[in-house]
Length: 511
Picture 1 (cartoon, rainbow, N blue to C red):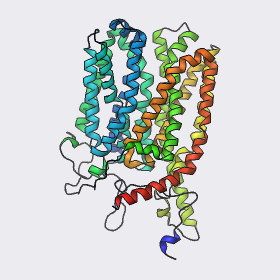
Picture 2 (tube, helix red, strand yellow):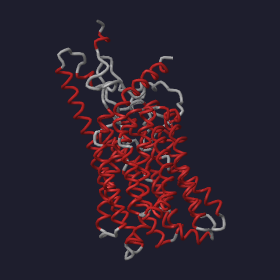
Picture 3 (cartoon, rainbow, N blue to C red):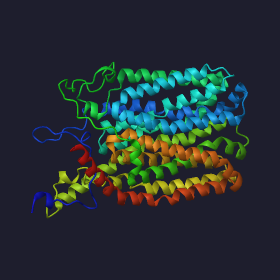
Picture 4 (cartoon, rainbow, N blue to C red):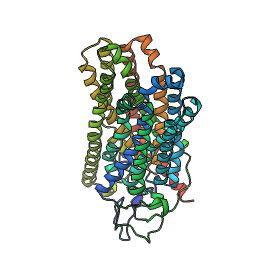
């Protein structure tokens, strides 16, 4: 029997995945596998930290605006509903624009698109800060430009992690990276309230202008190009705008003679919605994210009603509870994901070594096409979701019965932790499934979850008025529970879907 026929398609429920050729680690002439990236561990952390700082602007720009809505309604002589419309158009662009920028980043490079997004955000903030209060139309237009610039940084950062990190270390990097995008909704209203009360509503946009300009300068100076179709493992020396002014990372390890990797055709990101395993994860994430947004956006109104002794500053500080939980979660869950990956790898290698038929060597058994990545990433999701559901329902009844303020704050902390743990696990898996389109698939994720969040936010007050606070959050908890089977569905479907993508991509690359 031929050697290829002796190797099984499955090793303990392990089947084939899709390692794109432009992402797979190269080998030298002796067949020894080279490192996935030329960057050291500390250099990777620096790159991810810069990307995470940029990713903070998407939710921060959206949420820092909330405390200023009544003040801006008076300044522009418009109703609250018309000023809220600027929030709606922002959320629409927040979902749509990453589909464009993310696809371009997968084709033309991360660095130039990062810079274009931050420059757009900075200029839009200057425009809003200088907008005459008689020009409401201009405020609407510039809010759209703000969203177009800020929202896409989330997808771009995920693409950077997919470029420089192997599946074994992506969990830890996503832990740091998600800190910016997920903590923004918690600290945004607090920061906005402080600026509003001290310096007026225009100071909010001057602050965003200065912050985005500083981030832009840091990226121009330090961020290298990471897209593997342009620089490979980082050893290819890029030219022009692709080169940082101060090359802090990868120095001495780049090869001026290294050939540029072969190009790949531009892929329509909407085709990712045809991938069943990816779509299941996107819908699951959207539901959890919508519930999270439903809780954060009602904190102010519900706390004022339940605890009338709180002033505006006190309510702003209440947002820090959920932010603290997310901060702790981002620092720990990434390490847990990496640990789970290492443990599964060790187990598979031991089983392969002990296999009497020697169908696969230990090194072959842990290759991407055999590794059960879905099982590794989703192992803890049922636990996180169980805690999420209990906290959601309990939080609603604490506010309904006006239990001591400490109770809902503690639940907020736990809620923040499990939300970030859930998002880290699923986002890491999404990039693992299609690493060659990491920015595009993250943009798809952003589109679906922002749409779901906007939908729930638009009706959450109506639901609370009809059902009461307690039963509203029981309803949201039950809605989350309905999607728990998605975890096992993806574990079952994922390997088959990866095998199809691998076969399809092999056909494309062979043409």
